[in-house]
Amino acid sequence: MHITEKRPVLVVTEADDVTADMVITELNRRCTPVVRFNPADIGDGLTVSARYGSRPPHAAGRLLTPSREADPEDVRSVYWRRPTWPAFADLSPDDARFAAAQTRYGLGGVLHALDRPLWVNHPLRNAEADYKPHQLALAHRLGLAVPPTLITNDPHEARQFVADHAEVIHKTLRATSYRRDGVPLVSWAEPVAADEIDDRIRAVPHLFQARVDKVCDVRVLVAGRQVFSVRIDSELLDWRRDYSALTYSVITLSAPLETALRAFLDAFSLVSGSFDLAVDRAGTHWLLELNPNGQWGWLEEHTGLPMAAAFADLLAQGEIP
Image (tube, rainbow, N blue to C red):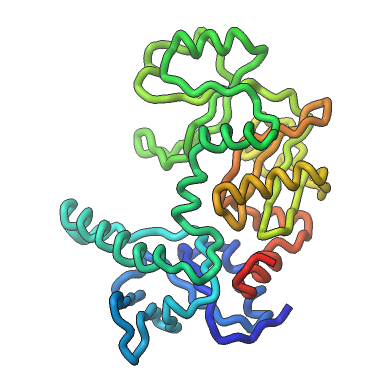
């Protein structure tokens, strides 16, 4: 598909984003203009202007980078990938907090207000879909298989939940940058026993989930109406721990399952999302979670699936076909 309309696609992401590079390459093949920027570039690297309440004869707004310019009201789509926001490290802590808030609610507000372009995905929709309890409740309503799950800060209830199930794992409610003694740490899904649970869990809610006796994992990428499903085989409880231990194969999901996953995204007004499923020995596909802005570039490299092309088609068309 080749679309030569002059309205650009905004790609909002950090400087080093290989996945965004893949999509931009596909957009270039379609002769689709792209304006790429990162909110952290505000200042010399990014200028924003917007007018409200009137329509002067000149442009209603402007996004200006060192090499590109766009009227925010005239973009065809926005690819909201992995933007970073400025930290203003050269300012005092109070001034930095003030400046960061002005940027997030100024630049972010100008972008959030755009309702004409197709968003993949709108950041407010991403944020809403990022709550795991909301995901699990919605999945259950849609008839998707959900492992028995408990979210609690009550140690007695947590120990009882562990006692009621053959094996239980603990997962974080949200991936969060974390350092201990200056060393970055990553949280994985881990087994948990009843005698490991004590009153310390009262401090915050924890997520406990019955372990699926799985034969494989499945990562499903939905981009518009296209569905890409990849089986991931390993001996790992959490396959993210060691990508070198994984093998991949392209699979096709059942039509009812694909329909349910699309309905899941529609309920959150999302155009795209990455689902993680675990398949048990009976062939049941258990929904573990949705990442509304999940990584997929490495899967295209291993499988040859045209994922970047699917995103480029969406962004170039500016609508879901």
